[in-house]
Image 1 (cartoon, rainbow, N blue to C red):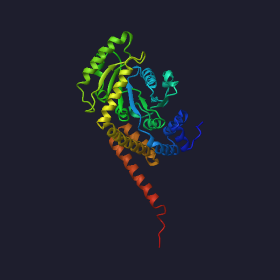
Image 2: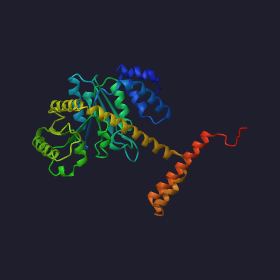
Image 3: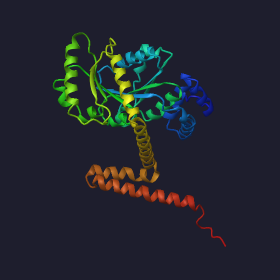
Length: 347
């Protein structure tokens, strides 16, 4: 059963008032792929746009098992205790077979989920690269309009196009496990170059020695990598999401990074670039959707795919043929729209 629709103005007023139920409904709206919902979502975002942009946007990534949910629960509670309103946008991996998603992050952040000053929204990643949901950017804006001044974006940590995540946040945190050793050799250089901080999690109990050793290894490695900003030198620290150690130090680093970016006028310019990149990603998404859903393309697709499978048609040539079909069809569609009655001649 579909949820009842709400007028755009009611959603906007509810979000401005910090109503988490209305915020959740609004995020459901922007995640919908129905045309009517998409149009209303754009109206809502336009209405609220002036009230967005005030939050600190922090991306959090790490391999499965690194303790992201435990860390976010502890870090989120630390921020709430400091007087912040915290939104956590978590992303669960969707099954490549069924498209389903577990969406269990909220249950794993049991303390934060009970706080009146926090909002946790799990969303499926779907087919989107970078371990983010299709509408994570829009959800982030809605959270900002609702008064949340820290937005944490947790990714699935699959190591796939992490630049997508880094390109929507102000600060990019990479969580690592203790015991770097040989693992240091296998880490993608690109991910480390995107990091503003590498935090070795689970620095507690028997892991403490390994965590401190790993921190030293990562700190050394960062010196050899090209920093993404001249205003900031990435750091490596040890933390414990379970026991809360190092969270204060981490937040101080986040604050120092923000000050450096603001003082150097880089935060504003970075966000301008992110908006442009966001626009182009939307264009790519909609062009691909239009291409795949066009009936002329759909009619040709099965035979073209079969020819590729048989080895009688190179994939590059197959792409050219389908694009030619799409281009010709859209041109004909445009001509029919411009001249709906071509047989009528005016005197």
